Length: 97
Figure 1 (cartoon, one colour):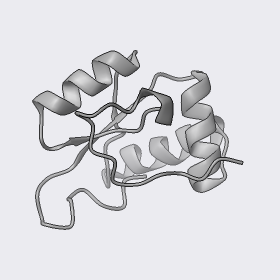
Figure 2: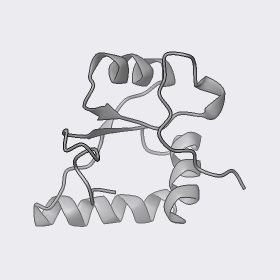
Figure 3: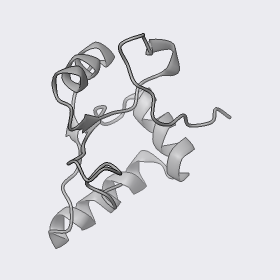
């Protein structure tokens, strides 16, 4: 949500997001911050306008997100738990409702 831009070790953190109106994006934000996608988009628009943060990069598919994160150690993303493989490092799990 733009509050932090580094990992705990100080390394830059670049978030990746799913496209607007994707089911996984809606579910993620509702579980993480209890806000629907419209409210999250409004939040990002305010931060972008104020110059305080830039919204996450958008990538279309889980496969492309995994490949991008693997190739860029500064990137972080969310994916469905069912898509987690041995080569994916899980740093946080959002509880399912």
